[in-house]
Amino acid sequence: MNREQLTYLVFGVILIASLVIDLGLLSKKNKKITIRQALLQTSFWVGLALAFFVFMWVENGSKPALEYLSAYLMEWSLSIDNIFVFILIFSAFSVKEKHYGRVLLIGILMAIIFRVIFITVGVVLVEKFHWILYVFGAFLVFTGYKMFSASDDEEFDPHKSKIYRWMKKVLPLVPHDGDGKFRVIENGKRFYTTLFVVIIMLAAIDLVFALDSIPAVMGIVDTKTPGYEPIARLVIYTSNIFAVLGLRSLFFLLRSAVSKFDYLQQGIAIVLVFIGLKMLGAHWIDQWMDKQVQVFISLGVILTCIFGSIFYSIFIQKKGVPPDVNDQSV
Image (cartoon, rainbow, N blue to C red; front, top):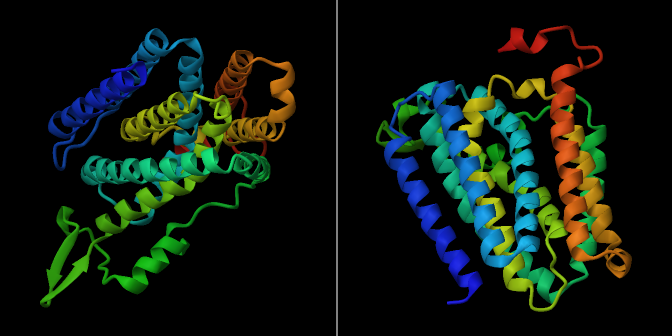
């Protein structure tokens, strides 16, 4: 068994054990999650991801380990932005708090499955058509620019989304949660509840976010060096899945505070533009800068932009927003 196979084995064991613990101990039906429990669970997932970073360093060396850490931080920061949309979806469909945990867990499990498929297809395309990285780079620059310049008025409306309108056309829906059920029988006919709609929307929204995050991770990871492909795939899979696994506990931890991160979107946008430009200029950058140095620079930019934008959001009042306006709306 080589190092890559051993790392996959350890990751698989950690993933299965964590999901068993999450399903068996932390996801009881109709159970509300307190802030303290959310903090403990978030600490558990982040600690697990960082422990895997140490394992990666020991087994595979500093370069893939730092790529993994950079990719994980990128995904984790995008998860916070993702959570804001999750909150809008739960609010729009009046999901009761006692159903939050179970709905989030199922939606995230679906997102993991879809992401594995999405990553696999993306990696195969990059390995066969390397010029696609330039397309990804241009896409990230454009997305980052749009994200940075987006106004507060451009808020996502779940009821006007394409996925919801599609579900209304093809599925018989009822405007209630069926007391925690996903399907109900009314007048002899089968209908799908709002909880089922929310689960599908959570998975679909996560895939939309994956359109940004997965190309961004490919811009962080070395996908060009011959023979490095197995490690690159490992880094992309593990960083994505670890970030998604922590999404549920992060939701409960940040749901009352995420609206305070007014400038996080701009921080993420700068990172996306940086990675996009790095992908577009990879041919020239590789000629005068070592891959290890590039990884350190990427990690530094990600840490500075993400945590800098969070701290800036906390200490700087957004222009035109009355003090404590977010607290009044919670």
